Image (tube, rainbow, N blue to C red):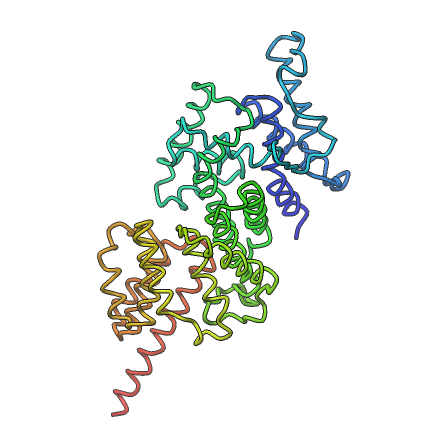
Length: 424
């Protein structure tokens, strides 16, 4: 990894913790963001010359806090700052900034920041979008892709959310137990989207984006410590672990995507799988099913299959059917169609996804699956059209390369058929 890439990765990983601490210190979203950005600029200048700090997050918090204080002084024309306890309840930035939880006090800066962003005064979509931008630093384009909306629409959504936080005087205080419970669903959705943004990458970006997956897992584990009897949080944590366990096998040596059924399962993390399976079993014993538990149960069926042919596709189809009832979505139906193709054939799966065309007209995976099903049915020209559209919508180079592989196969099959016809 190049020096610049390492610094970018370190800043990205430290961002949630640093932003949480700075926001708790300044009680102002814009001030915290400006302080963090200034600290990042100083890191880009100083780290290559002086070497990396032992704790990048602590360095960014300390430098960002000092920068923010200087900015406050300039704005107030050198007026004295308020007393420390009026602007901060943060201990010294060089003291222990690791998360600390006990039975009565919620101390983790990152989750605290997530709960603030998920304040009920904000619509749910704005809660999630603004926290993804503020807490994890995910770009507006990436957030828009996760929500399947346009970039300008997402920019407006985030701007409105930030303005509403400022205008409403949302308190930057640690929510109590009741408020935490009320906002749990939005925070869980946030953690899931953070994970998905790290998971949806290509091989070249994987080292830099992996911290997002790891951060999401850490946040899920912290949620589970706060809500130890909540089966949906067990399901969420299990889902992330089971998905991330496959990370080492998702790309081949040349950086091409390796589909689940073709992956070398010996590369999967057994430790993560065992932890995830235990959580799935524990959650299901509560007999209070929810969307995360169902998704985790699907991932568990894949994880338990020693070989691709051992996968219980019938059960996966049933679980996706249950998930459709709980959380109707064209993407869930699209995922179910994969299982339907395995159980009832490609024609049944194609009939299932055809009505989704309008709603998923800008979704790469829709056209990738449609092309694959058409190819199985021997409808090569239609498959080529679908694959061309998928390439145009590809989010990563690896996705585009994977689709081109299918097109090359179509061309090869077409040439073979033409040769055979000539020979006759």
